[in-house]
Image (cartoon, rainbow, N blue to C red):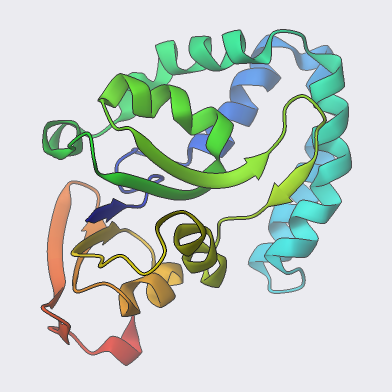
Length: 201
């Protein structure tokens, strides 16, 4: 089985940030009041003063209110990807197969549309309910393994593609690992053996 991270791996950028900006530009009167909360949470997280779980806890109220403020969110997700589908890196669009798995911290409900367009059937992301605004699970760091195992059990991971050292836990359980930087793809683990110093990842 091949597993791919999404943001900055398949997608050129951070899709969640682009999604927030998309709403901010089109519906500023509804979104602008959430900007300070969003920025403050991200900055505190980057400085190590906030865990990812605490960050999502702080943002959950904002998410619930946004879900209540907008109607027909699935249609808005489609329109977002109409604009940002071009940001999928061509190399990965040509590489992806229907049975590959996209594994990402970004909301699964947002990723399903672009995965359908790319012809990929399997996607696991953070579980956010747009009907209720409930944050049910976060697919990030060690939790990526839990989210993956909940769906696929102990299935062998033949290849894993990522841009981030934050995915080190998932690299550890993958036979072959490819590190992505821009359009460059470098193999850093082969048949369970690291080709680089694993402690520096």
